[in-house]
Image: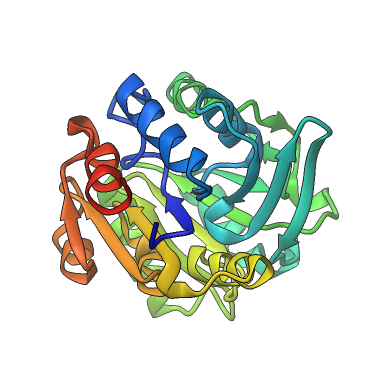
Length: 266
């Protein structure tokens, strides 16, 4: 097999719009894995909400989580932090002031935990869908912990305005702001992206980029797809993502991951 590592985005790529894994996709991934290929989930999710997907696939191994900010190895002994790109809470102070003032929902994440200051029914349903159980605190600024991701959750038009204003006023500073979905903005270390995390993991495994295939669906997958020898976009990706890909596969609702693995790996 030409490819020794398959990097898979989760939401919008591996899972369908009902956040489900199909039996056909599970069987195909297991077949590729059994031929000696590393299967690496690369996601904006936290380790705790990524692990159930890995387990559903019947696998153990390394997960690239928080959009590359935390790489975690999971096996029968538990979860071990391999690498993280962190920042401090004071660095997002002006942004915290902004979202509190505007009433925009947010959470902050360490590698293994998520913290929120308030939650409504809409947000509860979102966290439930992504298998997340955030910790409710009075003031996240008082946590005193290294943070790997600061996330905003709102309607697209609200986040469009936030992106414009934060860029104009340089509120993000030396950190990095990315749109990880229509309803999400993530702020992370400038070093944190799926591509850098995949690069570090590949080096540790002595795998050349030409031996890597990456499948994604959104702008936070671009670095990962560019680093891989073969970067594939599912058909439900925005046009900008499809234009950057080496190849297109069917959508996440039409077994796109299964189709790509059969075509290029089996």
